[in-house]
Figure 1 (cartoon, one colour):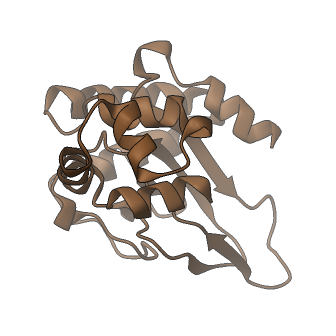
Figure 2 (cartoon, one colour):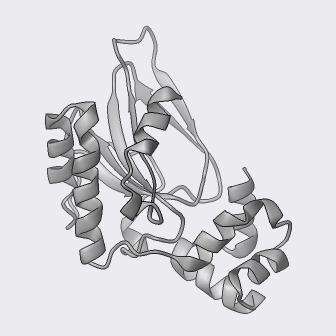
Length: 195
């Protein structure tokens, strides 16, 4: 938890409406048995990097069910978790499963992963900040005022009607907007955010 808090604090203020956190998950030594990660959907998009094999990277987004990942006995992953709805890249380019293959897309993920692996933990935020800035300039990441309003007042929302009111949209407009920007219906997004 202390590492997670430290990584969250490393997100520069100017990216605060886009990036939920920079994260890292690694082993300190060889484990006696495989480590199983139970990943819950959170409507966020993650730019994921395997720092043990920097050819492996990807853009991930879990849908409405959890995923169980066998990470093996030794691993070193890091990533950028974007708030729901801020990813503007091709939704078909995101995956909702374990990323274990070399990245072959057009984004500079392999280069960013190699740069992140080459520096210590305390300097990874500058690598990740540079990547997010590049993605902003390319139009692939942008603030989403609808999901931002929903996240700010999530404790007050008990129904889709409440969500529409907070977002200042009709339920139909909310449906279209959320489906286009997050891939979720309002009901599914509310359920996932509550989890």
